[in-house]
Image 1 (cartoon, rainbow, N blue to C red):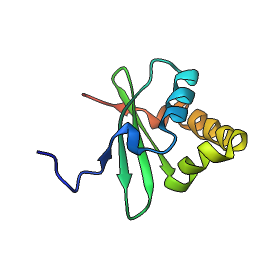
Image 2 (image 1 turned 90 degrees about the vertical axis):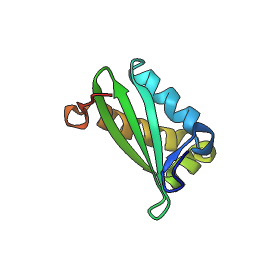
Image 3 (image 1 turned 180 degrees about the horizontal axis):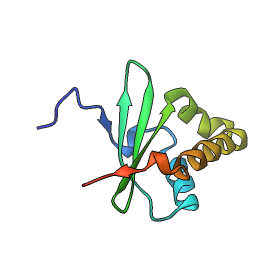
Image 4 (image 1 turned 60 degrees about the vertical axis):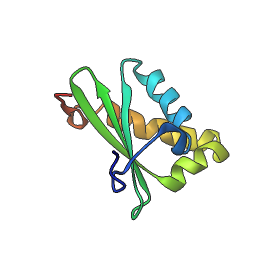
Length: 98
């Protein structure tokens, strides 16, 4: 039975999930989105990314993800910058015993 306080959300409930997944794959196709959490009070989505035995967490405000499908190119460029900055940062990747 699932805990109602569990902030894990399904792909279909994450605004612009497909865009984010596509951009991550373009940077490094060995990275998978393991889980996505939504924190209602702060309106933040936290993505857990897995690559081999390492995990990286990246957070996005809900309004930013909603703007990706509406704003187009400038929002996607901002997304790529955020993803690049985190994915390429060695400090983002922590050991994961998953």
